[in-house]
Image 1 (cartoon, rainbow, N blue to C red):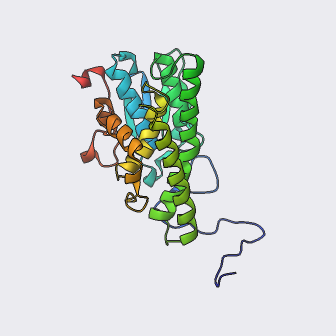
Image 2: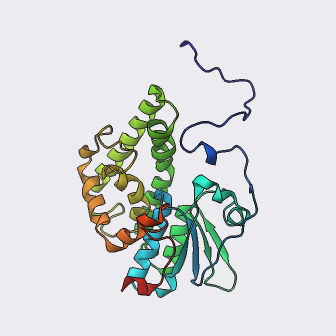
Image 3: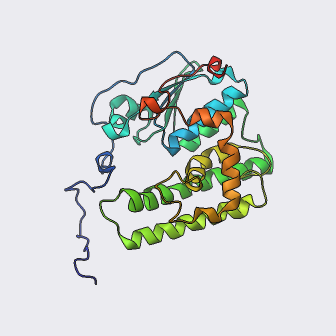
Length: 277
């Protein structure tokens, strides 16, 4: 055993913050820390989120729907600053008991419907508007295969590699190596698939691409954790081609600007179909 190696106690207790950039947002209990109602705007959908990869999935989806002419997809985007603990407000916890962004309230029907977890939100919107998800058959199944691949894989990229490589209070060889290996394996999975296909599930752009681009597209573009050189992302040429095509879509450009933490970086609340004019 290495000198000064950590020996776990028989029973774990939370007696200090874990350290690192996002230590203040982590705790071992659920529920609200304070009372705060959520704002409600005038549009059918109320999105409470932040411009992180998971949040960007949903704003891209809304912008793509608006670009297709679905005026019923107009939404208000409200910034939830997770660094300030706004996800632990009572109103937000009512929408998402897991206190994670994004969270959505669909007010288009007679009763408000809460939707949380990004894949659930994408499926809800895709099915409501009949867009970016095949209605049935093998194409639908393949789209869902890749959507849920992303949901299962990205925590190793973000909470695993990203945390230990970029945010942990000290650099530790074992976890960085462990998660770098896994992220490179995931990139190879994507690259082999995209060698044969234009998009993840085939010839058509779907919610699988919308979900995956903000994580893995951003990674090969060099925008995630300043780790492009470390991970040799230039090797994944098919992922790079796919990411470049998606990044050029006007709806993606708009979706990436919504709910940025710094208002100067983008826009904080919208959206009407007329915003596309």
